[in-house]
Amino acid sequence: MTASPVRPVIIAANWKMNTTPAGAGGLAADIAAATNIPGVIRVICPPFVCLEVVGRALAGSGVAIGAQNVHAEQAGAYTGEIAAAMLAGLASWCIVGHSERRRDQGEDDIQVARKLARCAEHGLRPILCVGEQLADRQAGRAEATVRRQLEQTVAELRRLGQALPADLVVAYEPVWAIGTGLTARGSDASAMARLIRKTLGAAGSATPGAVPVLYGGSVTSSTIGEFLAEPELDGALVGGASLKVEEMAGIVARAGMTAAGRDAVGSGGGGGR
Ligand code: PGA
Image 1 (spheres, protein in one colour):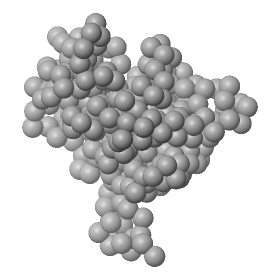
Image 2 (tube, protein in one colour; image 1 turned 45 degrees about the horizontal axis):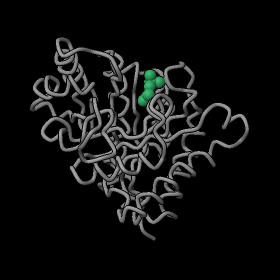
Image 3 (cartoon, protein in one colour; image 1 turned 180 degrees about the vertical axis):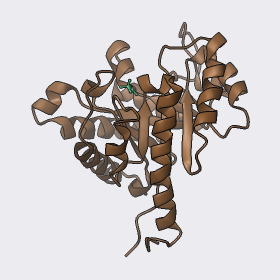
Image 4 (cartoon, helix red, strand yellow; image 1 turned 60 degrees about the vertical axis):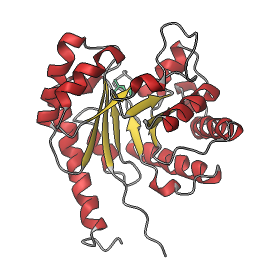
């Protein structure tokens, strides 16, 4: 029997439309200093206009920088938009298909797939966001919704002649939990992570068991433990709390415990390999 892969633990900060170039570097540096814990992959995703200053502030810190979005096309007449090629040297990760963009900009799975393709072409590691609305969960359609989002995305990628990016990260973010103070139950998020990997496997991913799945939706230093107690979950995409140094310190400290546990298993301490 093959052992399941030891997945990395990832904490990604989504600053959304917060911070300015004047303040972002200081905040990023403070977060980096407060979260320097071995084994946890840290990513900060500031607004586009703060990428450069955050990059300078984080140089040598080990914290990676991500964009919050990228355009689906390579270049052209798209006023106000940012193409993947423009992010060279500024970001190495990219959030794709966040529910706020699906809601406010009408992004659909077709565009999301094209954005994933742009990320793959330009060496951006994508964090693909999926998740159901409250009405979907109440009607028992949560899993079907997430499955459909993934299947449609993969189908469009296939139409474009592209495979799923090999370094794909998926964030399960129930829409009703984002910025509301409500969170999913750890067990529900874990079930969804299983479904996500199963769906990716059925859709042609060669190594679905190796795809990190993060939870997102009102994660704080007090709620992170419930999610990281679930072996199927590999970290979090953090919004509101990611603007607070103390919160990030607590979240990454808890993630460090999970990373240390996995490391012990991975190196034979727990007999896992
Ligand atoms: P939140 O946002 O932590 O503020 O709920 C999470 C997200 O939108 O990624």
